Image (cartoon, rainbow, N blue to C red; front, side):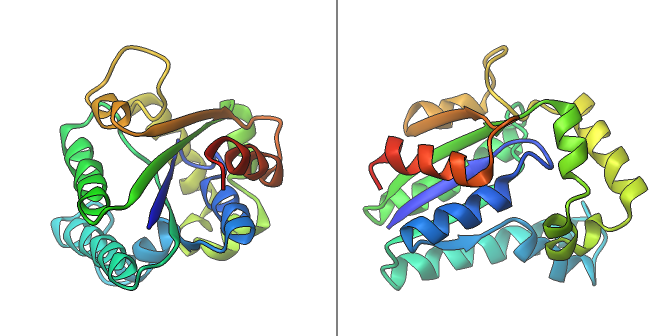
Length: 192
């Protein structure tokens, strides 16, 4: 199975690009909020039960995708590249896929903050991500995460880059690109 891990900061376009990639490749899409939203109805974001369940759901979907011998799975997530806990989580997904003989490719998206704040209000984002519909909270969350975490490479080396070093890694500035344009670049670069 080919595991295409799309990461970047909130509202950069991970889900939208993931959908475009899935449409072009026939791969299945597991975007972050497919696991987040059901759990939010029961447990508070960031609480220990929330984290355990979201991570377990993701892992189980990946395991079942491998067992079913899917051609590919596009997965999206915000990744705190400087966080040891995120490094361990992402590394566990990579180990799972590679341990089953699969291929892992990282697609890193980055865009200007001003553009991401516009994208934070798009119809598709709000339709797919119930927790983002409180626009005031969501806007503040994008700003807070921007100040608190390293979500893109290009600066000082982080612990997350150790995981990237062992895999294919595309870095795409999609500030002015459509999801279709990004997907076309990914398909070409990865030979899909």
